[in-house]
Image 1 (spheres, rainbow, N blue to C red):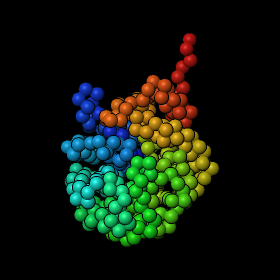
Image 2 (cartoon, rainbow, N blue to C red):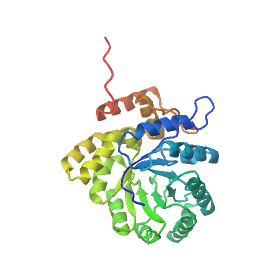
Image 3 (cartoon, rainbow, N blue to C red):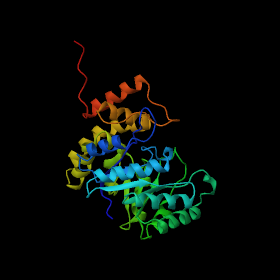
Image 4 (cartoon, one colour):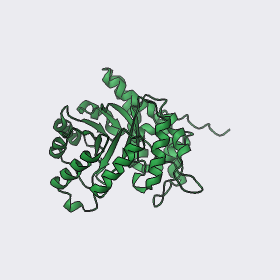
Amino acid sequence: MELNGVFAPATTPFDPVTGDADVVAMRANVRNWMRAPLAGVVLFGSTGEGLLLDDGERARLLEGTRAVLDADRLLLAGTGAESTRGAIRLSREAAAAGADAVLVHAPAYYRPQMTPEALRDHYTAVADGSPVPVVLYQVPPQYSGVELPAGLVGELAKHENIVGIKDSSGDLKTLGALVEACGSRCAVLAGSGAVFYGALETGAAGGVLAVSLLAAREACAVHAHFVAGRLADAGRVQERIAPLHRAVVGGLGVAGVKAGLDLLGMHGGLPRPPLKPLRAKEVQAVRAALEAAGVMAPAAAPA
């Protein structure tokens, strides 16, 4: 499996009445995102509220997404769990529902016991037990505090069923160490739209970028321009999406991205409790960021 290009880490829309995952709305969003040359879609990541979903919802969302996703686009599913057993089970279920690969974050509750040896054994067992390739997931440090050291990632990259790592640290030095450790054995994907151009310069093969949910064509353009050697063009587009990432993805999180989707005419909706929706003032800040990035037309001035 070749991981290359931009992947969209889909939000999960919920029915406003029942609160259940809304597969119809998800399918509509996926069709919209697929108008851009994305390499694929990731379900159940941090932006997708993966840890807040029920198992039955996961299967329905995967099957529904697979049905509308182009055959040449990859479908990845987040299957991280606190137990190795749980991560293997979720990975097998995701594969059965149509996932091409799984994205696995590290267990974090027993953080002091998550030594490199424990993490090595965990990921090796998951890779052994998963029917589809495994992508390691270095989540933002403020979420888990469990780091995957470059040396450990390099060792895991030797496993034939581990094909990549998503690094959401936002730190190019960390990403560069992962690129060096992985070599040609597995792909490094950036997780921050704020530094995507710099990540490509550092050796990343692409990115899993929440900002691509709001600016899919623009995020893909950064990658396409860079690969074609049009570095100035890539830099100009990066300058547009970096503030959008910082203001909405980094600044307001899941609720901010969902509010942005609503403003763009897609299905955002409310986050699942205990996450809270944005206040009216914050929604206006999302609108301003979308307008500044050129992905939403400015509101008409009052007559």
